[in-house]
Length: 348
Image 1 (tube, rainbow, N blue to C red):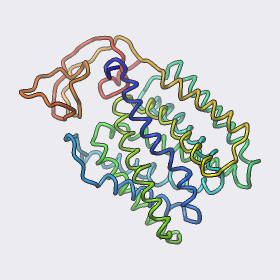
Image 2: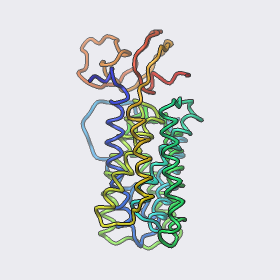
Image 3: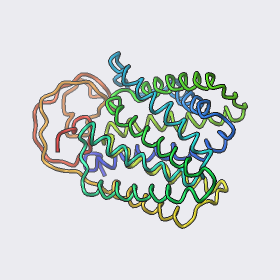
Image 4: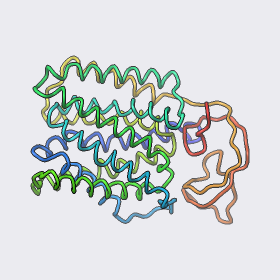
């Protein structure tokens, strides 16, 4: 199966890998964050993400960050690296890991809706059905939370707030998907960790124990740093809405791990909600988008390869893989399956 024939699948693999890395963090954050303040927890998680991104790595040169990206970086760091993880850390101490993991599916719902509002990304019949199924699953979990343990209702709502803020981060930060994902994660992680650490000191939160510090930093490196880098690469291929929807696999990983770690809070309503979320994920993974569309003339610079219908320009010596340089596209009209990448953000 070629990327050209199934572009949704190609970006979906990246989104699923991102989801697995992030999904496993929820029960781990709940366990090692116990007794820590939410700002300290957020600082360690995104400090780990920044450390991961600072590691040297080989690979093609990509389009780096620009001075004009700074305001957007500050916004996404404030939303995704401060407010959202603080809300999640607070909520995880008040609700079960299984339910909290499944509630993270609502990030996909909010991302699709915000991507539609901000970037006019289309919502087809399958995407609409997925939204309904996932919304119903989230409502079911919130409805049963108050009866499961004291404060669980507030904890569940805090997790929902985290998903809404992360969705806003995804939608606002979509243009950053065309930059080098490693540099984006490094900048976002460093800004978020610094702000959260300053707030932890300001609110008098106790410093973490060495074991918790190590566990949460490692958790942030893999579950936030590596995951966000994969997420941005997927978003570049298939758009904010579809990446966010496929990322909804993450909560199932977290719920399964929480179950394996001994949490037995799941009841019939939890299984019913999980089924609804799984149905929504399946609808997005099996989505196919194909129609006649027109590309205008454009000259730009971004990471690309020559295995798709859009990059047929000549090189004196063609690079074997992905590379970046200024190049021009001539006007063309054609039909082929496509995602919502840089070349397919047309109106529907």
